[in-house]
Length: 232
Image (cartoon, rainbow, N blue to C red; front, side, top):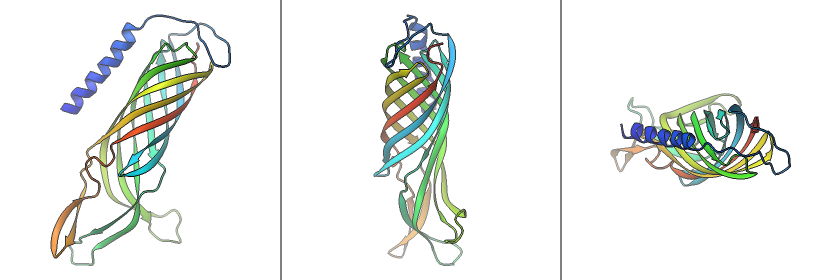
């Protein structure tokens, strides 16, 4: 209920910014040219995200596409996936009496995707500023190769579904009329991290989390290269 409340408030703020910003300017780019804008267009972007991941440095890649309204407000979808390896080891108690499951040097997969919303202030300026919000669903899990000689064979452990909220502020550079580079700083909040396992410690069965509750929360840096109709 609280998450839903904050999501609705954020969406309302973005809509308010869009409704109250009506000034028109001539398009400027770093490399020349300009013409009238259109009220509706679109664009796609490639994301490069730098963040923390359970105490490690992490890099994720992905992309998104959005409908661009009045060159200021955009709404669309995105997807991001972790590309760096983060090794973990777990000794999972096996209730059926067979030896415990040893997860040695399994590495983490983490991906999410969903809605991508944003606002751009003074979009016709060669260098301008804005903000965006990603609201996504995804999961993390642990995986390794099932057999060393089968390159495409993998096992997945401890799949945990999560919800991801990432607000971000951006500096945008209009490189060309159809190309824009954005550099942003944000904060990723990951909710629903609650998958646990049991292990034996000093002859006592103990429940432990695969990931701590806030392990995936992090400051993020994002470099986005976008292509689209920024001057129609």
